[in-house]
Image 1 (spheres, rainbow, N blue to C red):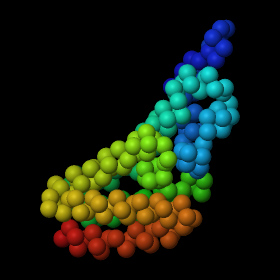
Image 2 (cartoon, rainbow, N blue to C red):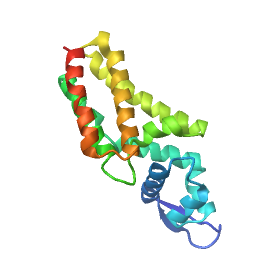
Image 3 (tube, one colour):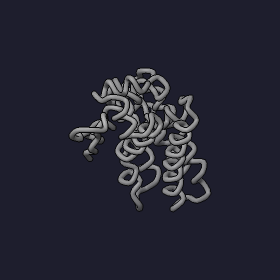
Length: 196
């Protein structure tokens, strides 16, 4: 998406690639956290001035909300992994292993942006947005489990979210993909027992 922004209010509008800007901002927020990234750092990284930034995104919180939506849409393929008809224990074990790989894939953007922002953001609006996305993912897991194991759906969803939060924290601490994967694989027998 290209937004036309005229930062000085006169002359010819210049093109601004919003998608590229969201990607750059996502990397900044993921590496440093919402609270540590100021508008000056964002505008410098994007190569724009503050009026152009505010015209495009409204505020730092507005930008972060768009970044979280972008991230959650392409982070882990929940729809594919938790496809209807898959054995729940197998699918959830795969989800945890996929999370372990994803959270450690890039040394500059370790962990899960949504989970870490829900836990660590000092800005109430941003933390609430991240928490809402975290809750939506939990609800997705719960609904998937409820199709075959309604009585266990809440407990299993809580377990999976707790495991994903722990894997994210481990990745932020510098754990390797192999170490995270080994921890994730330990869940397979427990999930199989819970969903037998």
